[in-house]
Image 1: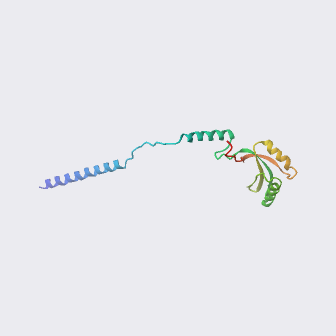
Image 2: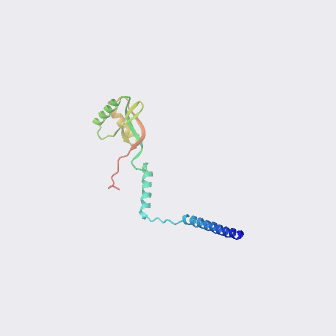
Length: 154
């Protein structure tokens, strides 16, 4: 009689075990990711605009924003006093109000630069005009800000 009880408990344990295995297999299948296909729909003008921007940037030598390039600036002041740097900037702005000026600080000196010139010849012209106003003046090659183009003029 004991043997029959044991067989009955063994059969129910095997059934529970099989049920558990089936349950685990079913859960892994339900969490498995299925692969799909993504379709991108875009206007063909997007490709032509990207190509046009690439050609404009490569011919003009501009960066991704389209507003800077390498050129020349005229440095007309270098010193450790901030007030003197701003005074030099104001003195130049009074003589040439249309000219952009830039003040930078690299310890221990302030440097004041003027202009966004594409060629060294343009910068040299300003140097000749400023020789009487400033004693220490020279041309520096660096990244400049290009003038913004008119969007109405293609």
